[in-house]
Structures are given as C-alpha cells and as structure tokens.
Length: 364
Image (cartoon, rainbow, N blue to C red):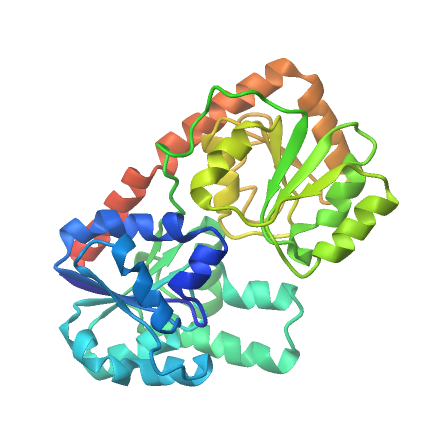
C-alpha cells in the first residue's frame, strides 16, 4: 500500500514543530510506515520542510510547497504539481477538513480511495468562532463535497458522526469513529514533586474560556499555569493583574516535555466553550491527573462526572466550585486519577487507535 496524507491548508511540518506538536503528529506515521511501501506528506511548508525528513522513516517522503505559492491557490494546484506521486498512491487521506478539496480534486483525476479525516467539525467551529456569514455556505458546500466523495469518513467524536449523518445524509456505515490517540508510554504518571498549581494547555483564544478560569482561580491561593500561545495573551495577562490572580504564562513547549509539566500539577482543567476530541485532556488523563472539563460537546463524551473526571458549567462560579471540590476531596482525587488512566489505556492508546486505522486501510 501507498498512502498520501494531505495536510490541513496552511499547515507545515515547521509549524507543527514551532507549536510543539511535531512529535505527537508524526508518531502514528512513524509506526504506520512499516505497513506501507511509501507514505507521502503533502505539506504547505516551503523547502524548510525538507529538514524534517530526518525525523521520518525512509519511506515517508516530504512533498512541500517548494514554489512558495499562496496557500489557497496552492491547494488547488497541489494535485497537479505532485501528480507523479499521487498516481502511485493507493489511498488519499486528509488530516483535517480545511483544505480537503485538494484530496477531492486528486481523487477525481486519479480515481484513488479517499479517507476524509477530521478532528473537529469545521462548519460548527467556524460558526461558533464568528466567521463571516458569506463564508458559511462555502464551508458547508466543501464539507458536503468531501463527505460525498469520501470512501470512508473518520471522526474523532460520536457527536460529529451523528451530525454528519443528519446534516449531510451520509450512511453511518461510511463513517468510522476513531478518536485521537495517546502515547501511553510517554504520557504516564511520574514520581516527581507536585507543586501547588493548576495546569491548562491550549490556544489562548475565546473558545477556551480563559477569562472565567482566571476569575475562578483568583481567590483560591493556587497558581494557574498556562501552556500555549494565542491572540488573547496580552488581554489575559492584564486581566490576571487586575484580579491579582497568580497566573504564569509559559508559552508553547514541545509535546515530549508536557508529561513532566502535567505531573507537576495538582490538577488539569479544560474550561472550553466547545471542543472536538481534545488531545490535551486525554494526555492529562493518561498521566493520571484529576481533570476538570466543562459540560460541552467534545468533553462530555470523554469525562464521566466524578468517575474519570469532573464536569462543570462554563461560568466562573461553577469552575471555582469544581476546583474546590477536587482539591478538598482526596478520595475523589484518587478515584478520578485511577479511572482516568484506565479510560485512556482501554480506549485511546496509540496501539488500539493504529490497529483500527490500519484495518480500515486494508479493507479499502
């Protein structure tokens, strides 16, 4: 078998590296490489992406945007610029929905099997993020086109599967639920000193509901540590100063360094307004941390309240109450910690997820 992976529009190996997710994103393909003759990475990076060839097995080939063509135009030209490699591939796969039209065009011309994978529902996220209304019909059309042309659709949440069935009238047999994976060898409990702090990992954007998190923690006498960057960083820093909240902004860190930082924390919290299948939540659970998440799509599929985590509402008072209840109840902490780790091993381990995906490719 030969596989062609179409990167999300605008995304490159260099960007994965800069945001600290390179190791996490390429690990499945490092493992899958032994089952394929060749894997092609069709990225939106320039020639700098060739430098990452050394991180990959010899049969994984990096095919970047050497011509530095603007990403939107390049997404339409890509199937023709790399037609030689795409003709050799047996299966085309998208990494996210945004940019999937490149794979759809390639399928039309080269008649190969198409796997449309999406980690979150593009149209739903776009609407919640306030994308201009004139863009929404275009996004929905591109989603519909990709889903209709796909031989198989991979979703990372049961909610997305139901949405696609109902919204686009797609048969459930063509939609496969394969959640995000966790490397349980990397993300595991470590015997290190736990500090008096709460940990958040993610983009500093409206979706993550971080102003309410800062307000909730401001009077609790515990440090709040943020890992990640985003457009709201300065506003969040100023808000924390106004409330005299103990908040530390650490920026992006490599994914391989995250287990140590998670293990140094008393608990992990993800206070988002909405999610897909949040990897950071799964990684914290794999480390055996007590976790708090808001009772919203994406999170409530993973957390069973007071069993493997704690669910709260998105307002500051509810978040504060959840933090206090976890910190003050040692028995609940222990129970959540044990069940969280068990959940990841049974449902989200890298080995189990790769087995599901490999079986899908073989059937195709």
